[in-house]
Image (cartoon, rainbow, N blue to C red; front, side):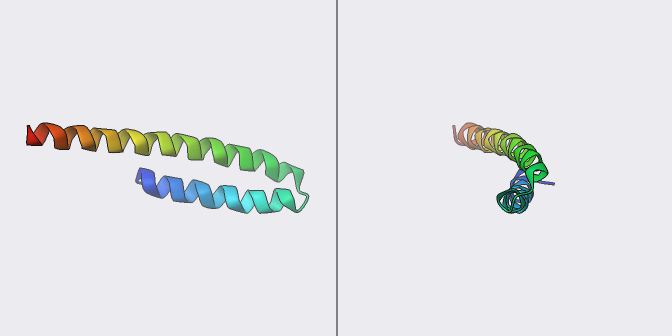
Length: 62
């Protein structure tokens, strides 16, 4: 799974659990926090991919 797909999946999971939490399900708050942690990891991975691509492009030019 690509980092972009991981971000989208984690965001969907967070949104679903957030709605449940707002409706009064306290356990969904824990799952929402877990989804946010996974979202953070996926975002960091994507940032690293972007940086690597930029460096590779820069090296290819010069």
